[in-house]
Length: 369
Image 1 (tube, rainbow, N blue to C red):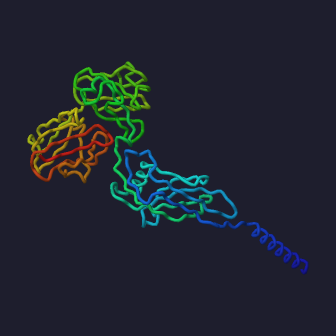
Image 2: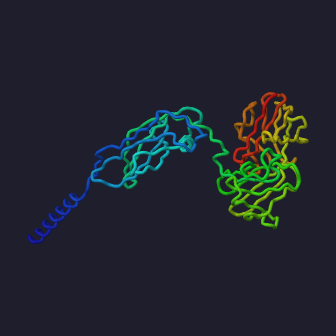
Image 3: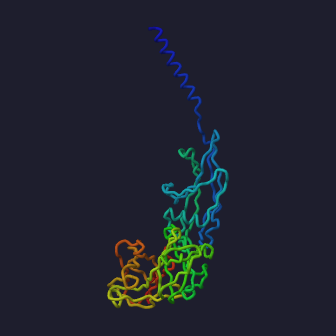
């Protein structure tokens, strides 16, 4: 019995010695110096004209750890006063001590933070250093007053060009990819769509990319909506406006006539007939120079005196403000919820202008005369 007790006590002592040895082998990580960050500007007004140029340069020092370990850095951006509850992060190298952000990059950060454009907003920035993606260590916080801009949709959406013999009469230049109508990809997925205006039958066109001829595509010769590199010119069957869709990756295209007008019980002819738009090659827009609109009714914009293609508003834009351009949406593109219509708050004669040059941002302006 005594021997059993001795063996038991010896086992307990061995366990305690081994446990203490394990504890001695564990390392304690100490953050002996906090990271620091500073900005070369206290305020900046972002400018789309110089979108690719550096707007703000940040200088930082890494945190110091004992023992020396590998970690990752990210710069965090948040609206001042929110305690970084909603933030945007950008990876930062631990092997450098500065990084610059362009006007476009900062404007995109403001957009992600839901900051309205054209108004100065205090944005806080800090450096976040992460160890094993588990433990985070933070620098001091610096604030920069940033004024963003409303991005030009012509610059932020991918596009292809539609050069052709029709383009000069539409306000562009014949057979010049750099000066021709564009088809845009609102989903940025190699699928392009948009409108061209053709003044005479049998006018020809092709599709180009990067505003130049290398890589252009035309019909594959079968006239069945298939494309190939350096293919045949495509002919418009009649004069008028065409709605064109191109799948650049799948090498397919479609083209349908789409002549627009306005209709509704707010217009002189009611729901019985349309008042047609006229294309203006100087402004490259579709215009009705004067039409009487009643405040008691509504109106819509549709193509070909039919309802397959129609332009409709967001709920906030159903009552139009004179002279204020609003984004409009086409039902055939699946961007309209319900069946909304437009209206004006005051009866009178109006000029209506429909800008269809960018399918990612169709624009409507109704101005009281």
